[in-house]
Image 1 (cartoon, rainbow, N blue to C red):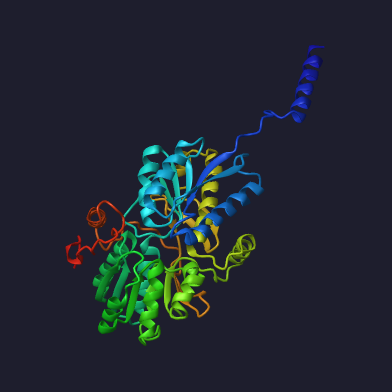
Image 2 (image 1 turned 120 degrees about the vertical axis):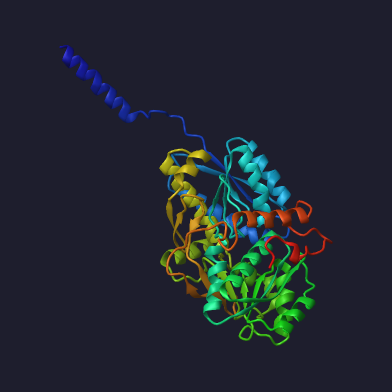
Length: 432
């Protein structure tokens, strides 16, 4: 009798548990920060990054969310200023539940955000290629390090017979450190720098720079010019008869968005056709997964372009989600442990998170700009390349010294201040 009663009780418990949820209360949403510029000079470039991030979040939510929780993006505007990015990072991390932030674009924004996420225990997922010379225990970098796009592209030109190079960039942290790397690479590889010059951010006064390029007649121009400087620069350069076939330019900044935006085309017309871009991803890659991604992105947002950074922003959300699922935990500490060695299928192919520095292993690519502004791949590395935040062409101490020299010389800023003069090239640490 006791056995029968026990069996009846167990049967009742099983039947009740089968129809009654263990916890009828819905799980609270998972709030994440999405911090890009919606206003200011970078709003046009960063809008597609915002879209790519939200698109990935929506895809995850459509499949049930993450650990049974809906992801809710908390939006913020960096207003194209590094100081504002730092302020908004602090505000987001102080708001209820936000521990992870997807965002940043320019290096000034990233370098301003990192001290905040490190101090306040957050996590930043950063999507853009950058100049290296940095690692952070609180950042997952889904953009490339210089050895994954700059160094291979310069080597490709060397392998194809180029020997003399003119280096030109806007005067802020990314071009300065990136072109210092190119300078060191050429010194070690038999190349020669015929000239090096930096223009104030946003400057359209390019005539003297173009005159010096024509005078030195380099085999290749390596350009890290940004934004509004590109239109006048290429118009003046190509208008003087130095077409891309005679003196090609390798662009380290320009992407599909900049090349195909109406403003850029109005200013530079077809002058950039035939020039080259160093990157990891191009919209035109003939991969089935990439074709689906581009088609869906354009269906949602009507965009005329999908750039390397857009693909990296999208990839970053899915990589983070994979790490969260593996850890069974959304805390930054758990994600940072879980993401080491993780892989995810990205629009440009499978990428892998390095176990030591949380950057992604990626393929390097060189593309040629077509007349319609699209970029046609002409070379790709045979395998994915391990990320190296500190280039071996100089020691870590030398790279840190260069960054400090620039930051202090600009009055503790990450770019030449308005009205400021160019810092002496011969005085920088490691100068040849």
